[in-house]
Length: 120
Image (cartoon, rainbow, N blue to C red; front, side, top):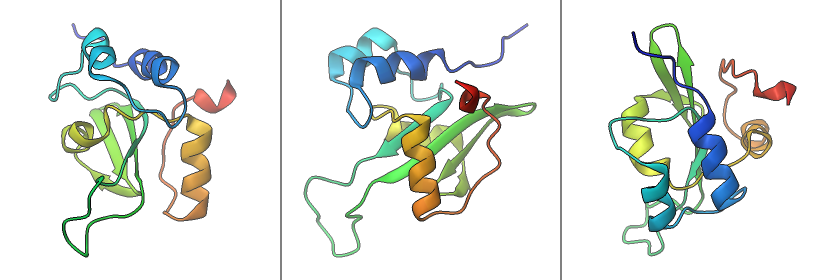
């Protein structure tokens, strides 16, 4: 029997990187990042350091990953996406739920995310 994913990985990453920080390679190794094992939490995808094309993003993208009865679900800037696809881009940049919610209110549609973290 497998256990449901928890927010433990995200909380540890947030503690190491800080809100709006980026995990170092050593921190990611310590936490154990696997591209096919997305972890529930709130993240951002920083824009590329160098824009190679005019349509490259200039702002962060925002990602939420959460457990459901059918596995994990994810939103990328408020749009449904595959958790594994988002995870490869966002795993190194955890953000607090509060920061994610502020960005959600500022620009992208609200999603149905039942985390229980709002009670903290």
